[in-house]
Image 1 (spheres, rainbow, N blue to C red):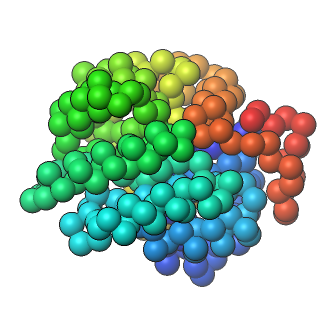
Image 2: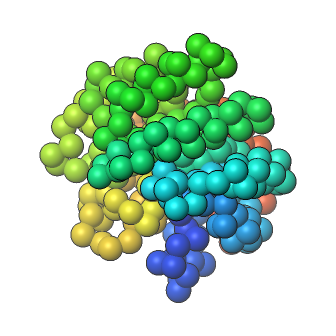
Length: 277
């Protein structure tokens, strides 16, 4: 069985002491690809170095909405543009989006998000969208952008919306990615959303080191190997075999991010002949 974790932050300090062991665990769990999100362009060189070490790692470039207030400048726009075309392993723009939880810079976040959409459209890359307490304005902005500039492809990452909100973004053509939150006992609306997403629009992720899933929820650090628990829960909710679910979500991730076949993965027993990308 092969899985793809479509949203990780393994460059964070929490992984530095034992990253080689973490990588072996994700390989042992059948994780054959990872998409590394980017909080700010200053991370790019470090993420790139990680991809040099781990050939199954691909990555994005962007500025997180919570960093927009302090770091969004015309120079950052130019830097994201430059970096987006600097390495063939860049498969997305982001993470970007809107985070209106305690936010006082809503207009600035919306401007920055639209700039990311433009960059993604220019380079024919998907956007990785962070959306917290902002589903309605996010959907409205995306509809307006579509009307004025045409569609942009992408994924609503670590999705936590209601079924109604989920449908808004499905109608706009987006993929929906579920994280460890879908395994939480009280996450009823997220679980209902996980049941309704069309099979060809589903993705899974860890958003590690955050949001460790049940049965690892008590651990301080989430890691890519735990994406299997997300897969198991969503497959259970949708009443489909785990192998079938893994195959579908792996194919979905390959399609959205344009992931190439993985030729060599050191220190792994994976059978290349069964690769799904």
